[in-house]
Image 1 (cartoon, one colour):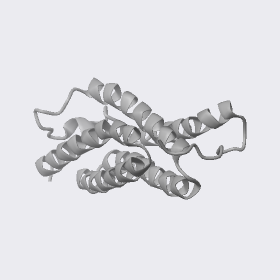
Image 2 (cartoon, helix red, strand yellow):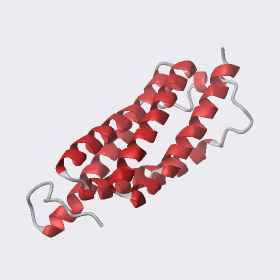
Image 3 (cartoon, helix red, strand yellow):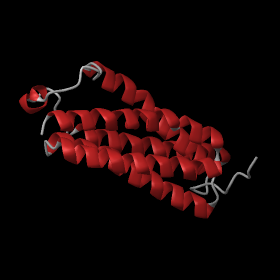
Image 4 (cartoon, one colour):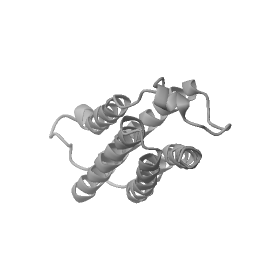
Length: 169
């Protein structure tokens, strides 16, 4: 077991134990809100796209993303709380980039109405997921394992996005 680093905020042990979780929950919430602002699944453009028969029903996306976002916040909070100062900065940067890429996909696909832009976004997000899991695993394997469903769903989203882009040239 690794040592527990000094508190992020210099506070009490209780504050120390919850600070990373509060920070990551806030960051993940900001990502979800920023991404959601771009989505209009009821737009004529989106409804008019030719989608593969294996695309999940619309309600699935909210049902899946809610626990995935919770797992990102939990696993990142756990890893940040266990990381040494240098590791913490790098991991926090990796998480920040990942969340920005996560939100940016919605803007590329929906706001710009660009399935191929979405493909590019999902490919970069997939690489960022692998890097985030790798960095997290160096600190805490349990936290890294909790990120695997997120990475798996994003790979599924990449396949779905490629299929949509190919069908709608």
